[in-house]
Amino acid sequence: MATLHERVILPNGEYELFFENPSHFFLRYGDLVEYRNGMKKIRGRKIPYEFRSVEQLRYDFERDAEAA
Image (tube, rainbow, N blue to C red):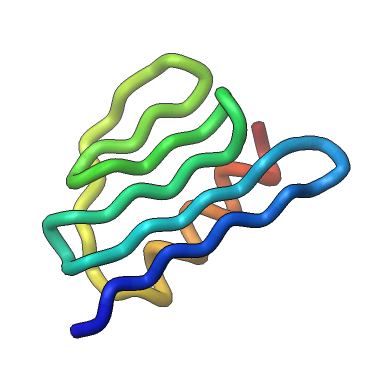
């Protein structure tokens, strides 16, 4: 599987994605939302996150970023 790295500057924050494999990923939206290797942190609160698929990861992350 190829490594994916994407960084987008938005008017209200910065979005960054790094994905190497299901056990090594990183998604961040400013200081509000971060997903990293089996954990997600929303407004400072850490919660376990189970990777299911890349599509589900993006969906979950985008939903949490919109809500933050």
